[in-house]
Amino acid sequence: MEYKRLGKSGLQVSRLSLGSWLTFGKQIEDNIAEDLMKIAYDAGVNFFDNAEAYAGGKSEEVMGSILKKMGWRRDSYSVSSKVFFGADGGEGNLKPTQKGLNRKHVTEACHQALKRLQVDYLDLYFCHRPDKDTPIEETVWAMHNLIQQGKVLYWGTSEWSAQEIMEAHMVARQYNLIGPTMEQPQYNMMVRDKVESEFSRVYDTVGLGTTVWSPLASGLLTGKYNNESPEDTRFKFESLDWLKDSTLVEEKIEKVRQLTALAKELDLSMPILALAWCLKNDNVSTVILGASKTSQLEENLKAVDATSKLTSEVMENIETILDNKPE
Ligand code: NDP
Image (cartoon, rainbow, N blue to C red):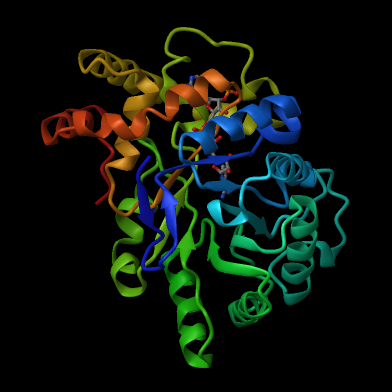
């Protein structure tokens, strides 16, 4: 495994990390979740990603029990949570104070995540989305206070705009507070704008780190949808029809067919090609893997070694197929 500083911070994160969205507490049994974490940890993964909203809090409970059972030294891994959506499992029963980035919810959600994960502090704590109903100043203060209290080590954002991230830094500078260290954007061969274009200046100005999500575009970039529609996948959940409809689009599938042929020429599998492509971007601190089966994770963890096959010529060939390079 390779490690990289999370932006300008001194925190070393494994280039591949493991997330639990849709899987832990939902799609997979707890014993599979345990196997996944063991495989990841043994391969050198040192960051496990979570959120209050994943499976309505169950994902954090499952991860917390596994961390406790494994008994890994607390200083050997980082674990995250995210705040914004609340933890009701999508049932829509949340009271107004149970969501958002106001001081009350940011603080209470942190306490709840600590309990569910059974840890004394969160290494990373993300604002899961921007909150138009809370001044950024209030959120920055809330995060700073949690850091001062030792409950959080680094805070960051997810799917914020470059402007919102810079605003948070300006507030932090104004009051001598700790600003956001990292952003968690979607990044894969199909979604490139934020990481490759919008954040270009933010990397230099504030030393932004990135923990990127859905590197395989929910499985599309494994090539398994090229010619058929396998049934045992996340798209079996009706509640995810919105994701299925925006992912399994013929134009995208056709590009994956061509990429799969290119991967074959390189003697790589399609998922490895797609993950190694993400890793080639130096502004990506860590690529968060998702997996519903141990065999998927075992395969995906080989991506670090495959980056050497992505020469500039190969990257150009990929670019020609993708034809979506941001301005
Ligand atoms: P991916 O796009 O990599 O999708 C992972 C899924 O693809 C797996 O669960 C599996 O689903 C399928 N898959 C993975 N590898 C293989 C393989 N080798 N062969 C066949 N199928 C495979 O990542 P996720 O969308 O899961 O996101 C990763 C993490 O990012 C999340 O767990 C979460 O921590 C974070 N995230 C953050 C978000 C945010 O807003 N901040 C939003 C979304 C995710 P299946 O078997 O069901 O097909």
